[in-house]
Image 1 (cartoon, helix red, strand yellow):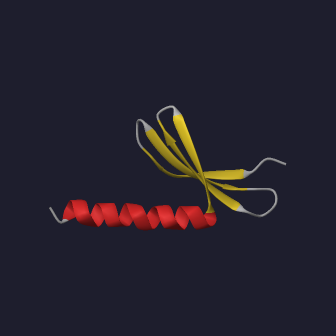
Image 2 (tube, one colour):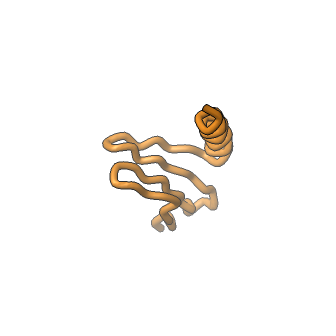
Image 3 (cartoon, helix red, strand yellow):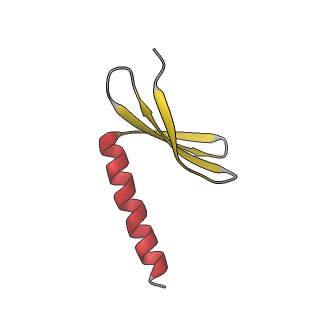
Length: 61
């Protein structure tokens, strides 16, 4: 059985997508040019916290 996937966001060079795995777990994936980074749910949550902090800092300048 193949995972059910959906695209969260996409640009010309990058893509973030989610997969519902056959075992019921959700995984998240970032494709950055020729690199793909895979996250389990807890790791994804921490990554989003990091990105939000980066955006907040960048917007403050």
